[in-house]
Image (cartoon, rainbow, N blue to C red; front, top):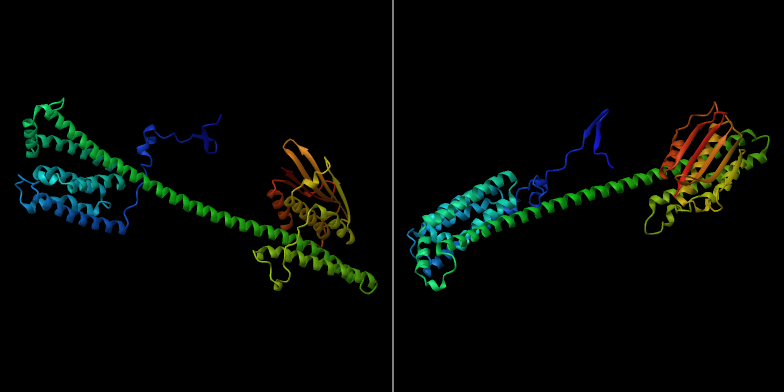
Length: 464
């Protein structure tokens, strides 16, 4: 069971925010808090052009309808009829910039002009202009509360228009006269007046309902497009952040590798150089051996650093011959540990290496990245013994086991010396690198002085 309470401050518990009201989860209210951006300059220019074209087409249709006698009985002058068309169409020039205002203006014009100029109100372009105003208000209104309040006013006005049409407009009087004079054989079940009222109500309901439905569809489509754009931008930002983090992780890995390589080999070179200086005159043979060790260690350090730097230059093409041979070589693992121990033994540090497995073959199953971390941990630990401790011996133990959480592999390096009084405290990057390697694999570290003297470095890695 999940606790529905959350801590918002120490010692105080606060309830999680309540779930949205059921009305807020209705399909047509989804995203009601979203505000659609205003039209672009190109969209505003298109609205102006569309309104002008529609006005010209309306004037042409009006003249054609007058030519075939569709406007018979209209008492208003022709200029007034064209003016009526202009009054309902011209507001569409700013329909997306002021959607609710245009809807209210066109509704007022539709109501008044339909009663004053009935022949014009029957024009298809007249009705289409009003439909565009209703559709745009629903699709582009930024304040949805004002939209729904305006829509309620429009619906009330349209109901009044239907009522006035039956009582005031002469067009309906003529229609009723033709219905009453018709043959009763072709009449329906309902009386002519009731049939006409129901017919006009259904037509207007479909007209206004269609405008609202299409407008809501366009508004939701715009909302989805903006959400997709935001999600795309968010994904792009996350991808860039992941790429940046990958670069930082790789830089950190290379920094750890360089530190371990340089620290180990420089420590060997320093020790051998000091020994060669002391026996330079008394034991020339020992001096030559120390110099050979310095030469070999320096060459190995250069080779390993070139291998690491080759990662930064790696590409699809092989490295050029002028890169100094900076190619990647196989990274060390558990198989190279005996050689590492032997190297320190040659330098005068007595190292005892223990290797134990709970089940034969456990160490062979250790992944290569973890094996590299184990190798670098031992390498850094032994280098620290030589640089910062008076110990003449160290013990390295590599073992596996099983706990309640699963299998593990553990490496431990201990010595019995004391810190050198003449040595520096070091930069701390070596121990930090050991901890970072352990954390990279979800491991645990124990680094510090032992109670009986000496120093201990113990790292346990979980093996999944």
